[in-house]
Image (cartoon, rainbow, N blue to C red):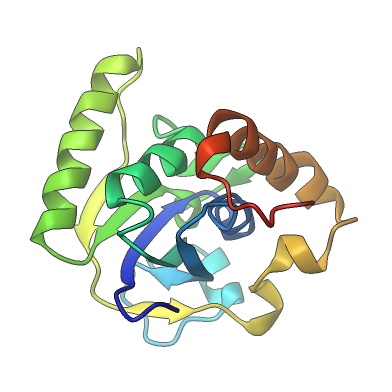
Length: 182
């Protein structure tokens, strides 16, 4: 991770899909799947899936702002999920799959607020993405990290993560890291 890296934290459905999509980007040093936005300390995957912890499945992105800007990360994030879906993305249903941006500072809040406002004008349905300060990020269990890369034949990944990765590669070709080869 570069010394000047910054962090961004977002959630839009299953973290495997968002992680796989954002890892494609040049300037992204690391993407960690995890949980945020809830009230339970050190939540487990099973607890988060129960819907009782208040957490969302999110990814925390360490990125180099001299290579990719925060608003560019948001653009890709909002392209790979539907921000008008309340508490669901594709087959995944529950508050843990909500669309959420957890900002790290006032600059991120202002950028995300303006981005969401502009995005709301583009959709027929209302954008329901939550915008809240990040209080605590909990890394998910190790088996969730790099899930798409480690499980290339997983049916869920083939039906849901792979199309998001392809969309990033096609829509944002100029922002995709040269080493992407999957």
